[in-house]
Length: 291
Image (cartoon, rainbow, N blue to C red; front, side, top):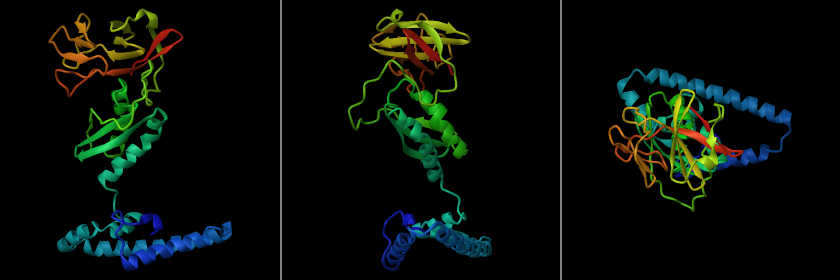
């Protein structure tokens, strides 16, 4: 066990604390050894680790079929030191929380390149709740980021998780950076950009409906922000064309479902929202990445 494997509760007392200090000192002593010496040391460490793993494997094989012993093993695995050693030897599978956190870590660099981030809020199988942070928070492409990035990573690592929920209304920890007209998810990189209309033709507070190949689109401008949604009510998929647009909201003409055009969120049924398409302005044109 390396010094990096310090128990999660940081309460290593007495003998354990001394052992960890000894490991740190040995690491410092060998840090400047030449390559050949390090290879010999690593081979010796690997051989000892293999011996320990074999011994632990045999021990577990002997007791796993005894009901009382199985219960005792589960209780023992709650000890941080025992858990760390068994995990290091591959004798325990990573917990669901560890796998979820690893999935979030895998997408975090892409989010941070766009001044965003993601935090784990809760795990209640088969659902995981996350919170998008930074520039991802409140961005109209947040649902695209959630589905193409965060949700995909979690479901690949944790097949027992079938639903990822984005907790909205996160508390701002710092002043939010101003949004640009280009609302692009960092994961929306696999589709071509398609021109829809001249950017100066979309008026302030106006909704514009367009057909692009097989996609029905709804464009909306507020200041220098331009948003693009699928023109399909989250209720039954009906077109929103002809719906009343007022104060940044649009009402579905079929059954009256109301949507916030700043975020795409449904105000009638908050659990659903309009599908978001990545949108940008380039050379005076509004371009969209239909997903």
